[in-house]
Amino acid sequence: MTPPSSGIERIGTLIDGLVNRLAIVLFVILFAAVLAQILLRYVFGNPLTWSEELSRYLFIWIALLGWTLASRNRTHIAVRLFLEMMPPAMRLGVEILNAGLVALFAVLLAILGTKLAISSGDVPTITLFFTFGVVYAAVPVAACLLILQAVRDVVRLWRGFRQGATS
Image 1 (tube, helix red, strand yellow):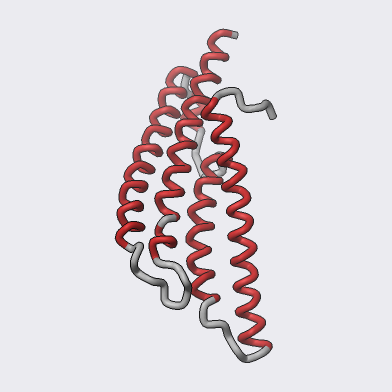
Image 2 (cartoon, rainbow, N blue to C red):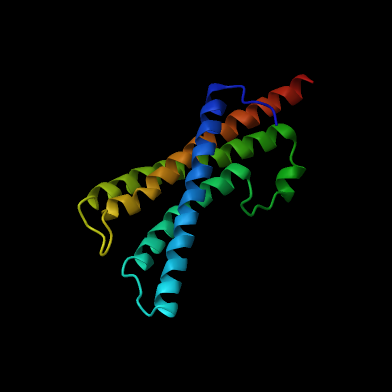
């Protein structure tokens, strides 16, 4: 893999590493909470009161971070048959339009998610020590990561097109 060449790529690579680590840490905590709940409930007959709620909120964060990881790795389901049949300039336009629509959706998601997280900032969770604002903050965080990825995609597409046009 070639080293990142632009500022946006360097920032993106740094954020990618942080998101990967965060997803791993959240998954390990989720796994531990579920395992503890199973052991304490079925082996010792004394279930935890908070592990199910924590697992649910961690799953929300992991799912939204997973969405951004799938976007970065381009592993979402896609039918590219027609796209591959297009001339390079038209394909570039369609892919940039797609990235723009993803970014637009992510901007709306960031705005609405931020409003939701702020309005829920004083609503405590049932058994945990934080508020629902922390849970709902996953939405604007994921949206901002998607915006960054859409910008990176456009830069990558444009550079690839320019290099293909000059070679």
